[in-house]
Amino acid sequence: MKIHLALFATLTSCMALANETNSVNLLPSKDKELQLPYAQSQKIEFVCSWDAGKRPTVLEFTARIDTPAKEASTGGPVPLLKIELNGQLLGETTESGKPRLLNKPLKSSRDLKTAEVVWFEPPHWALMYCGSSNPPANDYTPHEGSPVRFVLDVTDYVNSKTKNEFVFTYHKTMVGEQTLAESCRATGTGEATVVFGEMAVRPRKDSDGFQPKSKP
Image (cartoon, rainbow, N blue to C red; front, side, top):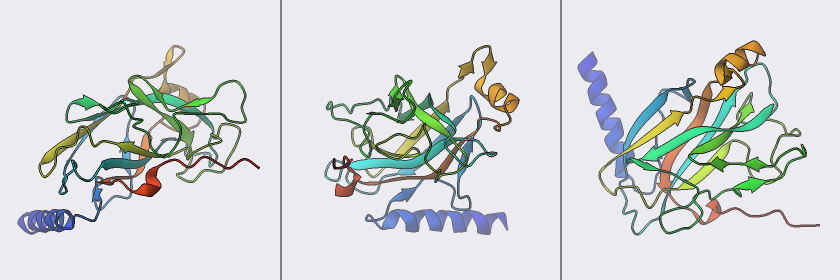
């Protein structure tokens, strides 16, 4: 039985890579999400079947700090996620100096006036506390761009037609003298688990660029 399962997995992988017009799903096919517990790392390998030198490539994912007791965006963002591709840190700009974050501005205002939303504070990408991947808006929600969706240009570090490796690392974030996980447990908002609702590498689309809201 194990041999049959392994063969099925291999065939499925090959079929997924054969069609260059499709994105490469980075989540296990049997799972709808990937959970990253506090202070842990996750390695994910993939093959880019197209020529990234000719077709710019992006990493698209949704991610949030899970607050299972609440549906609304309850706070954040918190800079805690380090992303590396083939040993290279994904910072706020590419090797050529262009913005890496494509689908929203790096900074956005929100109704809560104490601070703006900042999506990258070296070396970490920031995530928001959310009870779902489609949270209703509240005072913490950024005025521009999705609170949970990210599209990052990874063309500069992806290897074409060979193996690549992402490493997602959950930084050991502290809230005062408590870890973030301890703080969330104490306030009844879960284990501070980072949840990826979807994750894929694919060729870049014209629609990936951020479109500012038109002023009335």
